[in-house]
Every structure is written in C-alpha cells, then in structure tokens.
Amino acid sequence: MNDKEKFMRSLRWEREFMWFDLTGYSPISEGKMARVDLVTQGTHGQYEAVRAQIVDADKGVLDSKTFKFADYLKVVLNGENPNSRYVGSMKVIEHCGWYWYINQPQDVRQLTDAVEAWIAIHEGYW
Picture 1 (cartoon, one colour):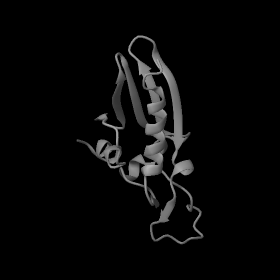
Picture 2 (cartoon, one colour):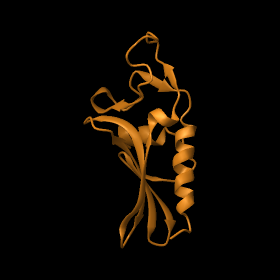
Picture 3 (cartoon, helix red, strand yellow):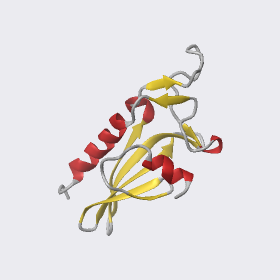
C-alpha cells in the first residue's frame, strides 16, 4: 500500500472500497460501480476535493459530483497563527507528502458521510 492509498483509507469510510492510489471503487449493482478519488481544483498537485462518480461498465460515467473539502470540513489550525492567510485552507499538496497541508480537519465524517449518501441515492436507481 502506497502513501496515496493510506491517505484515502485514513478518511474512515463506512462503505467498502477497493483502493488503488487515490481512487476507490465500490460495487453498486450488476455492472455498476461507485468511484471516488481525490481531485485538484485548478492547481496541479493541490488536492482540494473528493469526486464521486457512478460508472456503468457499458455506458461509462452516469453521474458525477465533486465534494470540496472547504464545504464539508472544519479546520483545526496546526499551531499556525490564526491571522495566517492559510486559515480556512484545506488541501493535500502532493509534493509536501500525503497528509493535510497547514490545517487539519476536526473530523472527516461529514465529508465521507456526504459522499456515501450521494452514492446510496444511486443504488438501485439504474
């Protein structure tokens, strides 16, 4: 298991995923899978969101949603000055290592619960 996969597993998912680097797959129904991965939001190597997709073996991507860290995670400052320009910044920067950069989330369950609820909506739908 590499550092990318360790980071994704550390998000404490309730749902079972098969992980490869930053991407996890979870079966939904015959021929359909949920796919989640860490994604950038415009800056190479700065991961700021989780993207969830519903993928059909024959038709490809059926639906997709991006869950930005800033929308779901509350920040705990890593001993930084509260007036720092980084307050509110929540990201993982590839070249700094596979852990939260500057700020740590208090709890990741709000993010993973939202992703898993979105996936659950699609179970049995198609």
